[in-house]
Length: 301
Image (cartoon, rainbow, N blue to C red; front, side):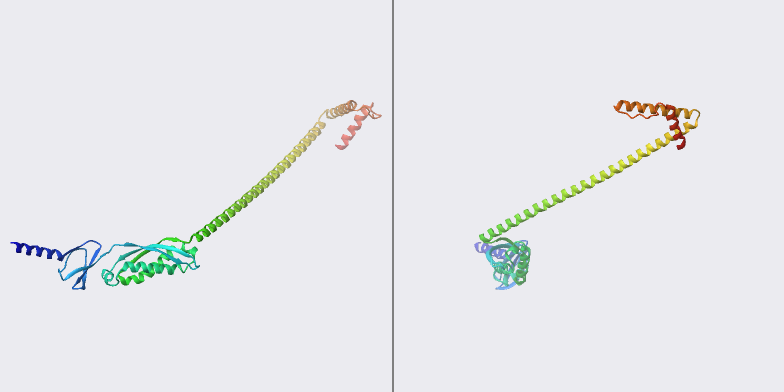
């Protein structure tokens, strides 16, 4: 009874040893009698117990590895501390198992040496603005070497670039001086623009005032011309009416009466405004004065 149970148990154990379940995105490297035999794919796989064994297990997922902080010297001889992170993925499990002993360690070491080399090619000021260039250069250099190790370098990112404290203080002073310079430039530009605006406004005001004066003078001249024209027309009309009146019956007698009345009225006004008067000798001969005035009118006519 007991030997049969033991045999059955042994058979079950051997069968279980021959069955291997591989998870998704995972690869098992199988060796038969110490020699590479194949790669087990995800799912249920069968091997020969005692002859086959799983020598390596690789995850096919993308993994991130820290690149420890290191001291790099820039082109202008400034020491900076740089660290980063690199992303790898196993694409050939066989090469990752037999191409190198520890591909993760090899890649991180190669990333550090490549980073030192790339930082040494540029000045300190450019290390902060050319991170993408440095990242691409590191990826290209590592990927060329890592392709024989069965891994793919997907990307590399610089996490921190830390200059010495003295350099940071100098950079801060430089940035402060630059900000002050920009502030002074902006202030001067503002004053310049203000002066330009004031000048433009004054120019526009003078132009408008001159235009207004021009229009005022034109209007005034037109008004004076219209007034003169109106006075002339009224005078001409009055003369025409007087001429027509003289042609009518009794016109000359009316004119004589008018001349006599005006003559007497003007001498009356002179007597009111002046204490001393020079009186013509023929003032008493009113008819003679009127006759003289009428002779002048007739000659003018």
